[in-house]
Picture 1 (cartoon, rainbow, N blue to C red):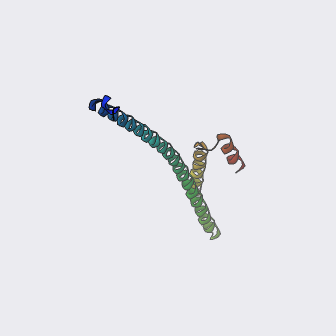
Picture 2: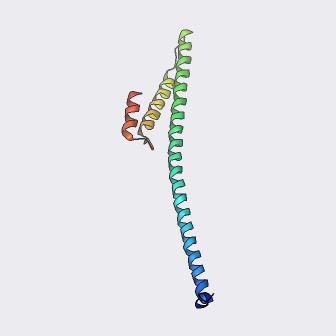
Length: 121
């Protein structure tokens, strides 16, 4: 008890307030760091969504090309003259989407591994 008499109320309150401020600063720094890590994960997610969008659009162009080419072959089989311009347009669009897919960075994957996979595919 005698030891407590040496501390004033002002000193104890300032010490408690100082400890509280240090803890608050630590929690704030940790929260900022955690949110930056979440933001990094969101960037990867956005990149994957962009890659999947381009892949889906390229897949759509492939099926448009196949459908238009099939219709042109049906017209030719029926004795008409097929219009291959729409099939050519779909083929060109598919080529553009393939080039766009190759140009998109591979995200968390190593670029050399990605280029080997694309080359082998």
